[in-house]
Image 1 (tube, rainbow, N blue to C red):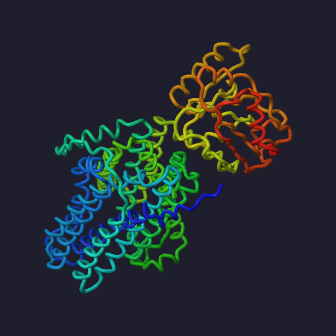
Image 2: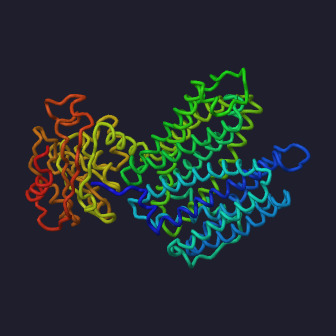
Image 3: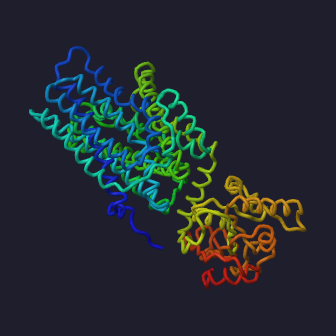
Length: 623
């Protein structure tokens, strides 16, 4: 089934005004911040070490995320989000007016005050920015919407950084920058006027104005969510730890290891930002328009591999001449290897971060979502500060080179994500399912909207291969509890996936009565809890590609717990490596097309023989 591109969201009023508003905000942040840093380094009359003032800028911008994220989380739930965004954007105009006066009169203190205020603006905007998306978008648009937001943010950061450099190169930089930052803020407010109504989720909430106690409470709320959400928050913050190290070291790396001038810094930032944008855009395609956390291990693997490659490829550019322009640097073969590594870091960073944001949004209660995202922002800020400390320790005290720092970060990435995936094996399980359905098979879905988004249902399907459960589980957005023959359940490697997914092993009554009875007890409990249960009523894999007789277990299940039944059929698996086709081979029908078809839910006529007919009709002649 074909679906509209995620870019179609940019034609909708429920997304486009918000997208423009948040992109202009990120753009203005970086125009102002980078212009201030360049002014300190090259334009203002300052006594003493200018690097101290640059580091102070970084501190002033990130400090509000510690101080005000908890309040922002409360605001995002107590007040209507569209009205809150417009108020924040009005404040941005006032803040930039102060900053523009600072530029016009070379008043550093005013500029620093405006920088701290812009950090506060961003801290207040963050929880609203991510919590409004699930209200504005459908479930199958959430990944695409997050991808567009991440793409817009990183491209806006890049454009702001480059734009600031261009404006600050002018002799009349002060009026140019002043007009730009106020004008962008006004445009952001105008765009926000078109954001549709987004009602408050907890208007009755009482605000706690104690930023310290509320920050602690917000962190406890975020990290006290389900393991999948809480570890996603940690994984998200780890991404910003890694990203902050790479982005902070790019100027020095370009100068010391690529022997380039300022244009080489811009080249590297452009490649990295384009990589993030590409990865963010590809997430929707690779995830099948659903929140697919199986991409997170894939992204983590890529971050490690390309980080190691960046370390390996560093140092190949001759140092006989320094201050190369970006065009001159591109004349060296090693430059292309380095740029490919940086592009890879960006792409796999997109694979890593977009599903994490989407999971946090989709699995958090609406009346807690803004506060959970605020907790994420607090932790992000903490991890970024720690990344700066780690960089100072390793570079200045341990005397590591910048490529060696990249090596250490890449190895640390293995350990941190191994911990996350161990605590929440769902990440690894979904990755294996995703890998299977995107390597050996091309899985097409038909009429899966027949499966309800919530509530109990019994799925019945023909049984063709050892990986039927993996293919169905990867196609359906909701978790499914599979009932499967206990010998298949105990297969090496696959057993890890089945256990993690809460599968139910079953044996024949004559084989093991205890396993048999325990299976029906667990099935009944899952259905009472409103979950999806899938059974293969044939009780065994087909030996000839045809559907075997459905057994009576389905009747017992429905007598104990009456729920709707949804017939499913798998087409195209017969003859693949995991089937029992005697003519199969390892590479026979590799990457073959498999189709999963769902029929409408039924509550009557659920006898095994009738269900077998329905499944057979869905499957048709394609085995």
